[in-house]
Each structure stands twice: as C-alpha cells, then as structure tokens.
Length: 316
Image (cartoon, rainbow, N blue to C red; front, side, top):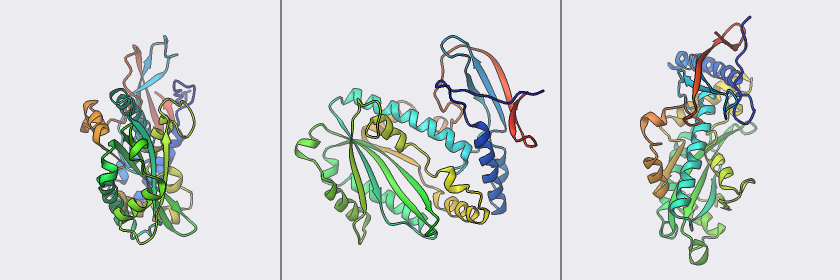
C-alpha cells in the first residue's frame, strides 16, 4: 500500500502540501468557469514533487524539494505559500545586511490605508497607491533621511459591503539622526500621504519603530519582515466555499493584480537585493528553493505524485 507524503520542516511542522493542492484545484476550477486560458496550467501546478532526502546528521532526515512545476499564478494557493516563504527569507537577509552596512540606521514600519475600493475601481486604486508611495518617498522631508525601503500591497475582501480593502505595508530604513532633528510625527505622515495620493480626506497611517535586536513581538524586525512579505491576498479571501461569491472575487482580483508588483524595493535595500542576486529573473521565479539552498549532503531522491481520486500525495 502506498504511503502518504509527509514532509516535516526543521521546526517539526508538517508542510501543508495537501491543503495547498486542494485549494489550488478549487482555484483552477474557478478559472475554468471564468474562461481564463491559464486554468489548465494552474491545475497542473505541483502535481509531481521530487525531493532530495537530506543526510541524517544535522537535518534529521528532512526532505528538500528538488524539482516540480509551479504555475506562478498570483492567486494560486500553492505558489503563494512558496512565494511567502521565499520573500520573507530573502527580506530577512537583505535587512540583516543593511544593518551590517549601516549599524546606526533605524527601521520604521509604515502602514498606509485608504477607503475601500469597489470592484471596478480596485485596479486603478492599486496603481494610484503605487505612484503615490513613490512620490511620498521622494518628498524632501522623507528623502533627506531615507536610506532605503521595501513596500508591499495587501488586499482583503469586505463581504459585508462587497468592496476591497487595499493597503500598503512598508519598512523604511532611515539615518540615525532621523529621531533627533528630522522626525516626522504620525499626523504629518497622514498629511504627506494625503497630498501624494491626492485624497480629499485624511487616510489612516500607522507608524511604528522597529527594534532590530528584538527577537519576538510585533515590533521586531523579523515580525515586520514577515508582515511585509506575507500573502498579497490570503487564500481564505479567495476560497470560501461560496462559489458565486468566490467566482466574482477571483475575476476582480485577477484583473486588478495583472501587471502589478507584490513587493518593491528602493535605495540601499534595492542595491543589496541586487548584489545578493534576488532580483534576477531566474531567482525571482524560483519557488522550488523557497527556503534557501542547502549545502547539506543528500542521500537519495524520492518522488510523490498527486492522486486526484484519493485527493492526496503518495510516494511512488
């Protein structure tokens, strides 16, 4: 009798291959109903997984994904899971290197929120937010002490009102004297973003100081990196089991996200990302080595395939 795939990470947690594949198949079916050409390719995402089994020493016989095919869909649950692991890991490396180069630099976590957008306005709202953020970073008072930044866009669905909550998370790396003679209070951030975004109302802006040496808690650099690199759209906002609702949401988000970037860098952080090779096309598309390349010795290759009847992965 075939054994079910069981893939345990270094923390002892089982990786959610089955859950992500089931969600992927639901998403693929929605695409098929909506007549998106990529529906078939999405359905094939991660069907066959080839792993390399690591040597027991230091890795406890863990598996490392070696080969598969991912569809790279922006809303694909399988790809989003891998992308989040990859981006948060890379961002931690980038921020760590930034601290080494500018040890006196400080980090600020900035969240920019505006009124929800209707389905027909979401696409333009996302583009306008991106332009406004770039303008905000180039305002004299912000730019004079800014070393670099990383920003991401997140969208959640408001089912009660039937609209979309689009907002931005950003980590700003600023010079040490920012808090002495160039500090921008929260109320001023509101005014600056309102001007950049050309809003006729005051947006919601949250500003928090990040503590690089803090290991845990929401104000730690690690936590902020995770928040910035998390899902652009959560699976639970796309797949609820209410088919009619989900189809509408998928159609709106597919059209709105086309041509946008989930995460973007500027200044020293952009330079470090380039030096580390994270911005190369090959590296950006690599969801197989999402958790980094391992130098540990491998002892054998093993393959697991998705069984559409039994709805699980089995070793072959």
